[in-house]
Length: 166
Image (cartoon, rainbow, N blue to C red; front, side):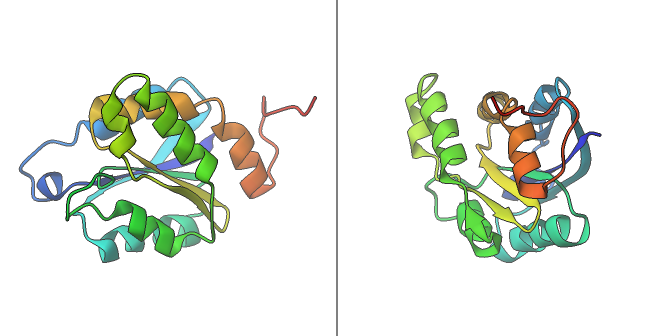
């Protein structure tokens, strides 16, 4: 059984059609190497209400296992993804966001500027990734082996080839 994933791109320019969204493609390439099926994809502007709307729909109505957001995690006045995510999650999973940052810093010091968060809403794990294709792809790579066990914990569902407690 595949892990059902949604990819939410948060980008004003991509939402307006001014820039192609290549970041979701980088994430998809990484996920293709694991037991993941991307079943939802959307681009929204960096507006808290729109980000929250999609996160709620995908968690509550569609019961996705994982939602990976990309974009909106920086320091500009228009970066709202962490705030929107915090507003919808039941509890945070700070270790995942810390892992993404700490591993990202090994490749670029700019990773320290990411404000991305991770958390759980119902049975859905939501993780904020950077907006650049390179940063998002590398971040997804970091999470690839952890996600099956995290999904098992969040959903209570045993996955084929899932984590075995030693």
